Image 1 (cartoon, rainbow, N blue to C red):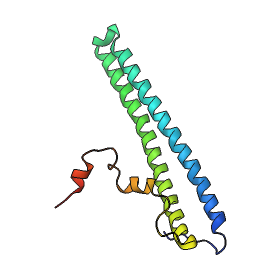
Image 2 (image 1 turned 135 degrees about the vertical axis):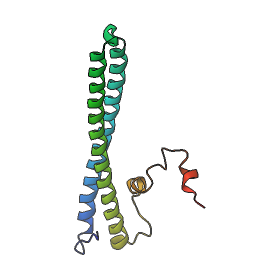
Image 3 (image 1 turned 180 degrees about the vertical axis):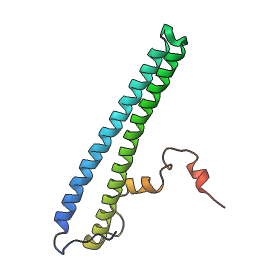
Length: 136
């Protein structure tokens, strides 16, 4: 989508976009903290529950499996929310970069982190990324 604004309004548009960018970044950090807390709580809960004496009954394991599925569902909703925020940040980066190039004459994109992550999500987390990326 092409992003345009009225001539002379670039500074106000940049200020608004940067404020939204900062807000979404803070939301992303909060999501990461909540995700870490959820994983830690889930891990501790699994260890504690697995040590109960009634762990041999089928009803216990059925309830335990249901609890794991429920926890997985809540974890996935957190992850999908983080993905939506990351896409929105990427869109804002693209708009700011387009505005910086057209209005201020920048020769290269100013903001690139989230856009790069959307384009190459395994680049930083997977050590095999460089090997897999090379195709003959």
